[in-house]
View 1: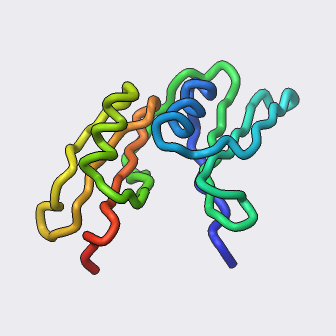
View 2 (view 1 turned 60 degrees about the vertical axis):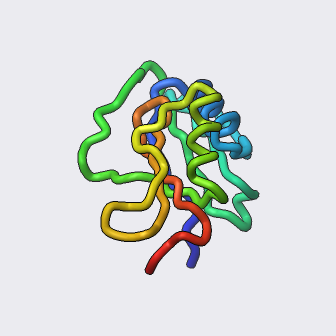
Length: 131
């Protein structure tokens, strides 16, 4: 078995694709409209679905926003430099919700950014993780 994808619902598919591709550097792998179900799916990621876990962006036609609830936590991305990654996000118009720095009860350097729908994405600095 292997993890294929994580699905999140988005309120503006083009805006979300732009964030994940332009700000986080993913590639749009595929996109398809499903007129009968009134939804569109887009898959983004850092590599092909055959070899990588990807993110499924689901846009339900006519739904502009969702209550994110308290069950979902965040997506985590490994970055070479969390400080630099935060600056790049800011320069591209993204929102940093927790600046880069060591976690409160450890040495792992982390940061958090929010996508356009408010989903949290954690940056974990490569080589700083404690187990």
